[in-house]
Image 1 (cartoon, rainbow, N blue to C red):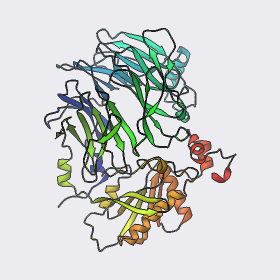
Image 2 (image 1 turned 90 degrees about the vertical axis):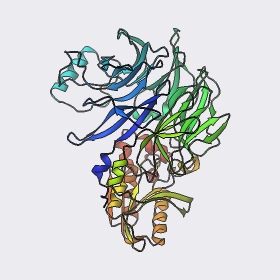
Image 3 (image 1 turned 90 degrees about the horizontal axis):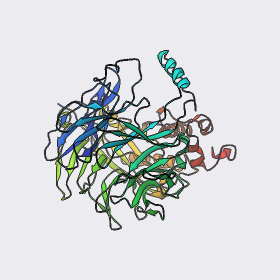
Image 4 (image 1 turned 180 degrees about the horizontal axis):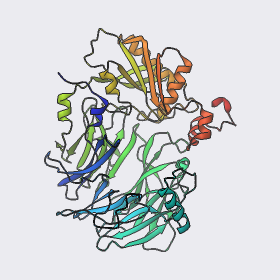
Length: 561
């Protein structure tokens, strides 16, 4: 007899993520996250496997863990980030000293990994130079000596309050040479640089900044290009307002792409893929004809783009070529949580769905599909996996979808207690997977029917759907959820006297809202939920949320709040 799913055995699953294909496409490196129950943490370490066989092996083992592994372009080195101490440096033994991520290198032909950097402020992001001779990295400028003395004293005394704006420092780009570890400052930027991309020839750097580094200024991002051979200031190459992320160069360096909202005034609008000339010029929305949101993407050498698409309850892979979009993955239900594509069109992807836990698969350009990991096989043999369906119903907005997870050994003649799990955002979504923040499979194993609705405002259903709850938080989206509950009751599955609702963040807001509108729910769990939009505006580090969704400040339109 199989066991029922528990929170612990879901956490015990090995979960692959961030795969990276070797330049010759012969192998892949990836992270695997696992729990450390004794110290109450999740730690990731690196694994490697040949792309032609399912024989992965672990290659890093430190307590601190490793992440963000990247192959050198010549394939001779594997770089990664870790907070682990440098065992070759006898001075690096102070357990009281704060350790931050450094770049480590591991030779492909064997040998111990070694620390390439010793940057006190830690590494935030890095990229290999095209010739594999150096690495460019992003860090914060050092504190001045008086401030460093104060900071060190507080650390030793374990004084740890966070002072708003108390430690603002500019971001800097540095280059470190592999042979001698020599670091050279390339550029001192502003406070808001969060990511950068090195051009294919290594002569230019594109970076995204919101200038201030403040979370509330997410909508003020711009893309600049820095010419490493010139003395001129960086040039703003994208003349478009609104949020932007994930800037990348085309293979020939002529274009820069990025992901941003379809509507510049709403960061919660459909996430689209844009391209612009790398010297500045007309911006083209490649997503103009599609309804799904862009998640991640990679350029290929022939100018095509492979991307993962947030589409309804699934996340398939698409290819954009010659002005048209075509789906790569043909599975009717698939969620790609992480993937990498090489220049030749081969793809390695972490895939899961409503019946399978995440595994890493190799998808060749010719259509072959080979498993690389089979971490969940033993789990599936021992544990009973619940039935899960995508369901739809009609609301006053139109057709709404959600995910329904059945109790173990469900007898369709029974009526079940229902737990409604509301996602956050509100521009988030519930995907058709067995894993979720609210651990819905665990509730199902305890005899509950679990309902996760994708109410209006959710992502993956087009721009009109995503922006439909503007100035209507708790209005139409609440009606969508209640209509879904009534639909399930009408199907005869649910005991209408045993309803519960729960959620975190905006899901917590909706939980709080729901129990103020109806007494149909007999239990409610609000996880860090907003209970008053005015006080949330006053206390949140992102008060722009209310202004964006309600279209005004509370002193301008209190009724909306």
